[in-house]
Length: 284
Image (cartoon, rainbow, N blue to C red; front, side):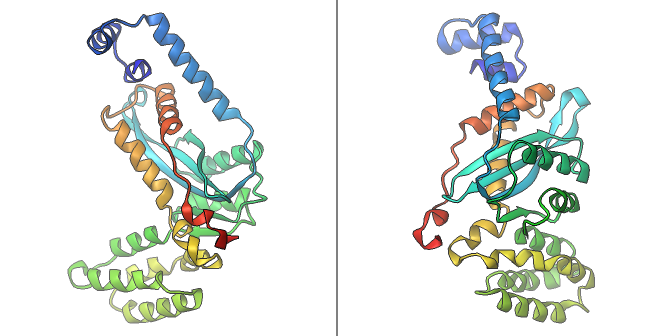
């Protein structure tokens, strides 16, 4: 609670009043500063530590945050969530970036590579359809297959439908069936039928859906037991939603240092449960 009060930017007077009500005593500025410095030291170790090259899958995404120091200008925090062979989830790294650009994502992934994540065990990189992420992955991990999140692909399709009242429900239902197919061949067959059925009625939506469609099917190269784990960015999105929920109370961060400490404090104490599907003996 002491660290929280400082990260929220409480004044000395507010801190004193808060802790007197909370624990019946005040906390000295020296004590609070030591606690913050301790957390900051842990953060620095986290940001520079060697990374073990043990991840089978990596999910990449970003979360946009307001920072007061930058006149409430939104900035993205880039995240990399690693999943090991035994199903353990770990936030490998996060970094405040200037934007979701190819340069920023390349620098982010290069830092992981430099610290030891060479990708020798890496079988798949999962992300949305961001061209910046795609280009960065092709630069740093050029031989690792990419899985384009099919949930994002479906969202983009629905956003580009022109006659939403008339077509949206039908197209959504039929498009979802593509990714429910039992095999890649069947998914492609359903995709072709879907495209032929709608290309004249909704050309913009279909053009968007066709773009890099085949990268949404790479999850079919893996056993059925784990396909739901690696076909979307859902596991990282759940974590980002939890982070978003916990920081919502303050609206914005005072500065970059406060943001980094806050995010680190959250991910340090959030318990990420192992993924049972990857712990199955059938998988191996």
